[in-house]
Image 1 (cartoon, chains in turn yellow, purple, red, green):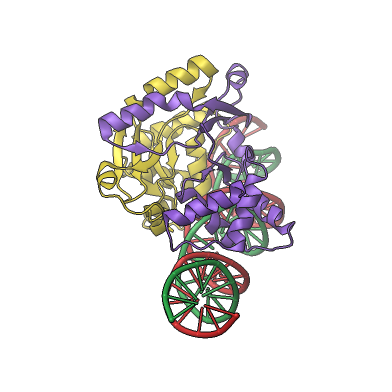
Image 2 (spheres, chains in turn purple, yellow, blue, cyan):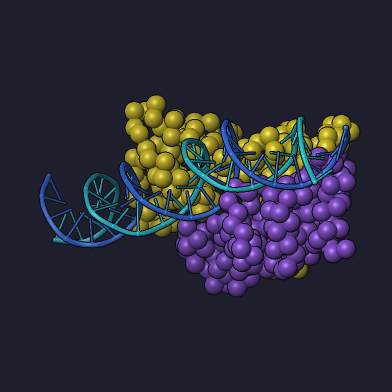
Length: 157
Length: 157
DNA sequence: GCTATTATTGCAACTTATTGCAATAGCACA
DNA sequence: TGTGCTATTGCAATAAGTTGCAATAATAGC
Protein backbone atom coordinates (compact mmCIF):
# COMPACT_ATOMS: atom_id res chain seq x y z
CA UNK A 1 0.00 0.00 0.00
CA UNK A 2 1.44 3.34 -1.05
CA UNK A 3 1.95 6.36 1.18
CA UNK A 4 -0.81 8.03 -0.76
CA UNK A 5 -3.31 5.27 -0.10
CA UNK A 6 -2.30 5.05 3.53
CA UNK A 7 -2.97 8.75 3.96
CA UNK A 8 -6.30 8.62 2.16
CA UNK A 9 -7.28 5.68 4.32
CA UNK A 10 -6.46 7.58 7.46
CA UNK A 11 -8.51 10.56 6.30
CA UNK A 12 -11.50 8.30 5.71
CA UNK A 13 -11.13 6.69 9.10
CA UNK A 14 -11.16 10.04 10.84
CA UNK A 15 -14.42 11.03 9.21
CA UNK A 16 -16.19 8.12 7.59
CA UNK A 17 -18.41 10.21 5.35
CA UNK A 18 -15.31 11.45 3.53
CA UNK A 19 -15.18 10.32 -0.07
CA UNK A 20 -11.98 9.54 -1.88
CA UNK A 21 -12.39 11.00 -5.32
CA UNK A 22 -10.16 10.93 -8.36
CA UNK A 23 -9.63 14.66 -7.89
CA UNK A 24 -8.49 14.33 -4.30
CA UNK A 25 -6.22 11.46 -5.15
CA UNK A 26 -4.61 13.41 -8.00
CA UNK A 27 -4.07 16.55 -5.91
CA UNK A 28 -2.44 14.58 -3.12
CA UNK A 29 -0.34 12.72 -5.68
CA UNK A 30 0.87 16.03 -7.09
CA UNK A 31 1.76 17.32 -3.63
CA UNK A 32 3.55 14.14 -2.64
CA UNK A 33 5.52 14.03 -5.87
CA UNK A 34 7.48 17.01 -4.55
CA UNK A 35 7.01 16.98 -0.79
CA UNK A 36 9.42 19.78 0.07
CA UNK A 37 8.01 22.24 -2.42
CA UNK A 38 5.80 25.25 -1.92
CA UNK A 39 2.96 24.45 -4.29
CA UNK A 40 0.59 27.11 -5.58
CA UNK A 41 -2.94 26.26 -6.60
CA UNK A 42 -1.86 26.79 -10.17
CA UNK A 43 1.10 24.42 -9.79
CA UNK A 44 -1.15 21.71 -8.49
CA UNK A 45 -3.66 22.20 -11.27
CA UNK A 46 -0.86 22.04 -13.84
CA UNK A 47 0.60 18.89 -12.33
CA UNK A 48 -2.78 17.21 -12.35
CA UNK A 49 -3.38 18.35 -15.91
CA UNK A 50 -0.29 16.42 -16.96
CA UNK A 51 -2.19 13.28 -16.02
CA UNK A 52 -4.81 14.32 -18.54
CA UNK A 53 -7.38 15.49 -15.97
CA UNK A 54 -8.52 19.10 -15.89
CA UNK A 55 -9.68 20.29 -12.49
CA UNK A 56 -11.58 23.48 -11.94
CA UNK A 57 -9.63 25.88 -9.76
CA UNK A 58 -12.44 25.94 -7.22
CA UNK A 59 -12.05 22.20 -6.86
CA UNK A 60 -8.32 22.53 -6.29
CA UNK A 61 -8.87 25.25 -3.70
CA UNK A 62 -11.51 23.18 -1.93
CA UNK A 63 -9.31 20.12 -1.82
CA UNK A 64 -6.40 22.16 -0.47
CA UNK A 65 -8.68 23.60 2.24
CA UNK A 66 -9.82 20.14 3.11
CA UNK A 67 -6.23 18.93 3.43
CA UNK A 68 -5.37 21.97 5.48
CA UNK A 69 -8.22 21.41 7.89
CA UNK A 70 -7.09 17.82 8.22
CA UNK A 71 -3.60 19.03 9.08
CA UNK A 72 -2.06 17.41 6.01
CA UNK A 73 -0.96 20.62 4.31
CA UNK A 74 -0.12 24.11 5.48
CA UNK A 75 -1.12 27.30 3.73
CA UNK A 76 1.16 30.32 3.77
CA UNK A 77 1.23 33.78 2.30
CA UNK A 78 4.83 34.52 1.45
CA UNK A 79 3.94 37.79 -0.17
CA UNK A 80 4.22 36.47 -3.70
CA UNK A 81 0.63 37.15 -4.71
CA UNK A 82 -0.66 33.62 -4.37
CA UNK A 83 -0.73 31.47 -1.29
CA UNK A 84 1.52 28.45 -1.17
CA UNK A 85 0.64 25.01 0.12
CA UNK A 86 3.10 22.50 1.51
CA UNK A 87 2.85 19.04 2.98
CA UNK A 88 3.01 19.45 6.74
CA UNK A 89 6.60 18.55 7.47
CA UNK A 90 8.09 16.95 10.53
CA UNK A 91 9.19 19.16 12.08
CA UNK A 92 7.47 22.21 10.58
CA UNK A 93 9.60 24.99 9.19
CA UNK A 94 9.01 28.69 8.76
CA UNK A 95 10.26 31.67 6.79
CA UNK A 96 11.58 35.16 7.22
CA UNK A 97 10.64 37.31 4.25
CA UNK A 98 12.57 40.49 3.55
CA UNK A 99 10.26 43.34 2.63
CA UNK A 100 13.05 45.07 0.73
CA UNK A 101 14.74 42.42 -1.38
CA UNK A 102 12.20 39.61 -1.17
CA UNK A 103 14.71 37.13 0.23
CA UNK A 104 13.15 34.10 1.89
CA UNK A 105 15.13 32.71 4.80
CA UNK A 106 14.24 29.32 6.26
CA UNK A 107 14.05 29.09 10.02
CA UNK A 108 13.67 26.24 12.42
CA UNK A 109 10.48 25.54 14.29
CA UNK A 110 12.41 25.92 17.55
CA UNK A 111 12.17 29.69 17.38
CA UNK A 112 8.48 29.40 18.24
CA UNK A 113 8.93 27.17 21.29
CA UNK A 114 8.84 30.06 23.75
CA UNK A 115 5.89 31.76 22.11
CA UNK A 116 3.91 28.52 22.00
CA UNK A 117 4.53 27.94 25.68
CA UNK A 118 3.51 31.50 26.57
CA UNK A 119 0.27 31.22 24.63
CA UNK A 120 -0.54 27.87 26.18
CA UNK A 121 0.23 28.95 29.72
CA UNK A 122 -0.93 32.54 29.79
CA UNK A 123 -3.90 32.30 27.40
CA UNK A 124 -4.72 28.58 27.33
CA UNK A 125 -4.58 29.05 23.58
CA UNK A 126 -3.32 26.24 21.37
CA UNK A 127 -1.66 28.04 18.46
CA UNK A 128 -1.49 26.45 15.05
CA UNK A 129 1.90 27.67 13.93
CA UNK A 130 2.72 25.30 11.13
CA UNK A 131 4.25 27.28 8.34
CA UNK A 132 4.67 30.89 9.31
CA UNK A 133 5.99 33.84 7.37
CA UNK A 134 7.47 36.72 9.33
CA UNK A 135 8.06 39.87 7.31
CA UNK A 136 10.83 42.30 8.08
CA UNK A 137 14.28 43.31 6.91
CA UNK A 138 17.21 41.00 6.30
CA UNK A 139 20.74 41.82 7.38
CA UNK A 140 21.94 42.88 3.95
CA UNK A 141 19.07 45.33 3.49
CA UNK A 142 19.58 46.81 6.93
CA UNK A 143 23.14 47.61 5.94
CA UNK A 144 22.11 48.81 2.47
CA UNK A 145 19.09 50.90 3.33
CA UNK A 146 16.69 52.04 0.67
CA UNK A 147 14.05 54.68 1.21
CA UNK A 148 11.25 54.08 3.64
CA UNK A 149 8.60 53.10 1.13
CA UNK A 150 10.70 51.76 -1.69
CA UNK A 151 10.05 48.23 -0.60
CA UNK A 152 9.76 44.81 -2.11
CA UNK A 153 6.06 45.12 -1.41
CA UNK A 154 5.85 47.92 -3.91
CA UNK A 155 7.61 45.79 -6.45
CA UNK A 156 5.47 42.82 -5.66
CA UNK A 157 2.42 44.89 -6.43
CA UNK B 1 -1.68 72.57 14.03
CA UNK B 2 -3.71 69.37 14.22
CA UNK B 3 -2.35 65.88 14.74
CA UNK B 4 -3.39 65.17 11.17
CA UNK B 5 -1.37 68.03 9.74
CA UNK B 6 1.59 67.22 11.92
CA UNK B 7 1.60 63.66 10.60
CA UNK B 8 1.21 64.74 6.97
CA UNK B 9 4.05 67.19 7.46
CA UNK B 10 6.29 64.49 8.82
CA UNK B 11 5.50 62.22 5.89
CA UNK B 12 6.46 64.98 3.47
CA UNK B 13 9.68 65.64 5.28
CA UNK B 14 10.71 62.02 5.07
CA UNK B 15 10.25 61.96 1.31
CA UNK B 16 9.96 65.42 -0.18
CA UNK B 17 8.37 64.30 -3.44
CA UNK B 18 5.34 63.09 -1.48
CA UNK B 19 2.19 65.02 -2.27
CA UNK B 20 -0.52 65.72 0.23
CA UNK B 21 -3.75 65.19 -1.61
CA UNK B 22 -7.35 65.63 -0.54
CA UNK B 23 -7.75 61.86 -0.77
CA UNK B 24 -4.82 61.13 1.53
CA UNK B 25 -5.97 63.74 4.00
CA UNK B 26 -9.49 62.30 4.09
CA UNK B 27 -8.32 58.72 4.53
CA UNK B 28 -6.05 59.68 7.39
CA UNK B 29 -8.84 61.74 8.91
CA UNK B 30 -11.15 58.72 8.80
CA UNK B 31 -8.54 56.52 10.45
CA UNK B 32 -7.75 59.06 13.14
CA UNK B 33 -11.43 59.63 13.91
CA UNK B 34 -11.46 56.16 15.45
CA UNK B 35 -7.85 55.35 16.27
CA UNK B 36 -8.45 52.09 18.12
CA UNK B 37 -10.61 50.53 15.42
CA UNK B 38 -9.83 47.86 12.87
CA UNK B 39 -10.80 49.65 9.67
CA UNK B 40 -11.55 47.78 6.46
CA UNK B 41 -11.02 49.39 3.08
CA UNK B 42 -14.77 49.57 2.77
CA UNK B 43 -15.11 51.29 6.17
CA UNK B 44 -12.63 53.92 5.15
CA UNK B 45 -14.32 54.52 1.81
CA UNK B 46 -17.68 54.86 3.58
CA UNK B 47 -16.31 57.29 6.15
CA UNK B 48 -14.79 59.43 3.43
CA UNK B 49 -18.01 59.29 1.43
CA UNK B 50 -19.79 60.91 4.38
CA UNK B 51 -17.69 63.98 3.66
CA UNK B 52 -19.19 63.99 0.19
CA UNK B 53 -16.10 62.65 -1.58
CA UNK B 54 -16.20 59.35 -3.43
CA UNK B 55 -12.87 57.56 -3.65
CA UNK B 56 -12.20 54.65 -5.94
CA UNK B 57 -11.33 51.52 -3.99
CA UNK B 58 -7.97 51.29 -5.73
CA UNK B 59 -7.18 54.74 -4.40
CA UNK B 60 -8.08 53.72 -0.87
CA UNK B 61 -5.97 50.58 -1.14
CA UNK B 62 -3.03 52.55 -2.51
CA UNK B 63 -3.24 55.11 0.26
CA UNK B 64 -3.43 52.38 2.89
CA UNK B 65 -0.36 50.71 1.37
CA UNK B 66 1.45 54.02 1.44
CA UNK B 67 0.60 54.51 5.10
CA UNK B 68 1.63 50.97 5.86
CA UNK B 69 5.00 51.39 4.18
CA UNK B 70 5.48 54.57 6.15
CA UNK B 71 4.76 52.67 9.36
CA UNK B 72 1.65 54.71 10.11
CA UNK B 73 -0.84 51.87 9.83
CA UNK B 74 -0.67 48.12 10.18
CA UNK B 75 -2.42 45.62 7.94
CA UNK B 76 -3.75 42.36 9.35
CA UNK B 77 -5.69 39.37 8.10
CA UNK B 78 -7.95 38.30 10.95
CA UNK B 79 -9.64 35.68 8.81
CA UNK B 80 -12.73 37.76 8.20
CA UNK B 81 -12.40 37.93 4.44
CA UNK B 82 -11.06 41.45 4.21
CA UNK B 83 -7.85 42.77 5.68
CA UNK B 84 -8.10 45.30 8.47
CA UNK B 85 -6.00 48.41 8.88
CA UNK B 86 -5.25 50.11 12.17
CA UNK B 87 -3.22 53.10 13.23
CA UNK B 88 0.08 51.78 14.54
CA UNK B 89 -0.46 51.85 18.27
CA UNK B 90 2.03 52.41 21.03
CA UNK B 91 2.69 49.75 22.00
CA UNK B 92 1.45 47.48 19.23
CA UNK B 93 -1.08 44.82 20.08
CA UNK B 94 -1.87 41.46 18.53
CA UNK B 95 -4.62 38.88 18.34
CA UNK B 96 -5.29 35.21 18.84
CA UNK B 97 -8.00 34.01 16.48
CA UNK B 98 -9.87 30.81 17.27
CA UNK B 99 -10.31 28.67 14.17
CA UNK B 100 -13.37 27.00 15.67
CA UNK B 101 -15.49 29.76 17.16
CA UNK B 102 -13.92 32.83 15.59
CA UNK B 103 -13.16 34.47 18.94
CA UNK B 104 -10.57 37.21 18.78
CA UNK B 105 -8.41 37.54 21.88
CA UNK B 106 -6.19 40.59 22.35
CA UNK B 107 -2.65 39.94 23.46
CA UNK B 108 0.15 42.17 24.57
CA UNK B 109 3.17 42.92 22.45
CA UNK B 110 5.37 41.48 25.20
CA UNK B 111 4.69 37.92 24.03
CA UNK B 112 6.87 38.61 21.00
CA UNK B 113 9.86 39.95 22.93
CA UNK B 114 11.67 36.62 22.97
CA UNK B 115 10.99 35.85 19.33
CA UNK B 116 12.15 39.30 18.26
CA UNK B 117 15.39 38.88 20.17
CA UNK B 118 15.99 35.44 18.69
CA UNK B 119 15.47 36.68 15.14
CA UNK B 120 17.74 39.65 15.70
CA UNK B 121 20.52 37.64 17.31
CA UNK B 122 20.40 34.37 15.42
CA UNK B 123 19.38 35.65 11.98
CA UNK B 124 20.23 39.37 12.09
CA UNK B 125 16.68 39.80 10.87
CA UNK B 126 14.64 42.81 11.96
CA UNK B 127 11.06 41.53 12.11
CA UNK B 128 8.14 43.81 11.54
CA UNK B 129 5.68 42.36 13.99
CA UNK B 130 3.22 45.19 14.37
CA UNK B 131 -0.23 43.68 14.38
CA UNK B 132 -0.11 39.94 14.21
CA UNK B 133 -2.85 37.37 14.09
CA UNK B 134 -2.10 33.90 15.41
CA UNK B 135 -4.66 31.26 14.54
CA UNK B 136 -5.39 28.29 16.73
CA UNK B 137 -7.90 27.02 19.26
CA UNK B 138 -9.16 28.88 22.30
CA UNK B 139 -9.62 27.27 25.67
CA UNK B 140 -13.38 26.88 25.38
CA UNK B 141 -13.12 25.11 22.02
CA UNK B 142 -10.41 22.80 23.28
CA UNK B 143 -12.78 21.66 26.00
CA UNK B 144 -15.75 21.50 23.61
CA UNK B 145 -14.17 19.83 20.64
CA UNK B 146 -15.89 19.72 17.30
CA UNK B 147 -14.82 17.51 14.42
CA UNK B 148 -11.47 18.00 12.83
CA UNK B 149 -12.60 19.93 9.81
CA UNK B 150 -15.74 21.54 11.11
CA UNK B 151 -13.93 24.77 11.73
CA UNK B 152 -14.66 28.44 11.78
CA UNK B 153 -12.69 28.60 8.57
CA UNK B 154 -15.32 26.52 6.86
CA UNK B 155 -17.98 28.84 8.12
CA UNK B 156 -15.99 31.86 7.09
CA UNK B 157 -15.78 30.46 3.62
C1' DG C 1 -0.11 84.19 -9.62
C1' DC C 2 1.38 81.27 -13.65
C1' DT C 3 3.62 77.32 -15.64
C1' DA C 4 5.98 72.90 -15.98
C1' DT C 5 6.88 68.69 -13.87
C1' DT C 6 5.49 64.46 -12.26
C1' DA C 7 3.08 62.09 -8.25
C1' DT C 8 -1.39 60.62 -7.71
C1' DT C 9 -6.07 59.53 -9.04
C1' DG C 10 -9.99 57.20 -11.43
C1' DC C 11 -11.23 53.89 -14.46
C1' DA C 12 -11.51 49.50 -16.45
C1' DA C 13 -9.47 45.21 -16.78
C1' DC C 14 -7.38 41.62 -14.43
C1' DT C 15 -5.83 38.10 -10.65
C1' DT C 16 -6.61 35.29 -6.72
C1' DA C 17 -9.82 33.11 -4.04
C1' DT C 18 -14.67 31.95 -2.61
C1' DT C 19 -19.53 30.50 -3.13
C1' DG C 20 -24.39 28.86 -4.62
C1' DC C 21 -26.30 25.50 -7.15
C1' DA C 22 -27.38 21.80 -10.34
C1' DA C 23 -25.14 17.66 -12.00
C1' DT C 24 -22.12 13.88 -10.91
C1' DA C 25 -20.15 10.06 -8.70
C1' DG C 26 -18.42 7.61 -4.21
C1' DC C 27 -19.77 4.28 -1.26
C1' DA C 28 -22.96 1.76 1.95
C1' DC C 29 -26.32 -1.53 1.79
C1' DA C 30 -29.39 -4.73 -0.32
C1' DT D 1 -24.07 -6.13 -9.29
C1' DG D 2 -27.53 -2.73 -8.68
C1' DT D 3 -29.69 1.21 -6.10
C1' DG D 4 -30.11 5.29 -3.19
C1' DC D 5 -28.13 8.74 -0.43
C1' DT D 6 -25.40 12.64 -0.24
C1' DA D 7 -20.54 14.38 -0.50
C1' DT D 8 -18.11 16.37 -4.05
C1' DT D 9 -17.43 18.53 -8.51
C1' DG D 10 -17.82 21.94 -12.33
C1' DC D 11 -19.63 26.01 -13.66
C1' DA D 12 -20.71 30.65 -13.52
C1' DA D 13 -21.04 34.52 -10.63
C1' DT D 14 -18.99 37.13 -6.98
C1' DA D 15 -15.65 39.32 -3.67
C1' DA D 16 -11.19 41.22 -2.48
C1' DG D 17 -7.30 43.26 -4.06
C1' DT D 18 -3.98 44.87 -7.83
C1' DT D 19 -2.39 47.11 -12.06
C1' DG D 20 -1.68 49.80 -16.57
C1' DC D 21 -2.72 53.92 -18.38
C1' DA D 22 -4.61 58.40 -19.55
C1' DA D 23 -6.27 62.39 -17.04
C1' DT D 24 -5.74 65.29 -13.08
C1' DA D 25 -3.77 68.11 -9.65
C1' DA D 26 0.03 69.22 -6.02
C1' DT D 27 4.06 71.62 -5.73
C1' DA D 28 8.46 73.89 -7.08
C1' DG D 29 10.37 77.54 -9.60
C1' DC D 30 9.74 81.57 -12.01
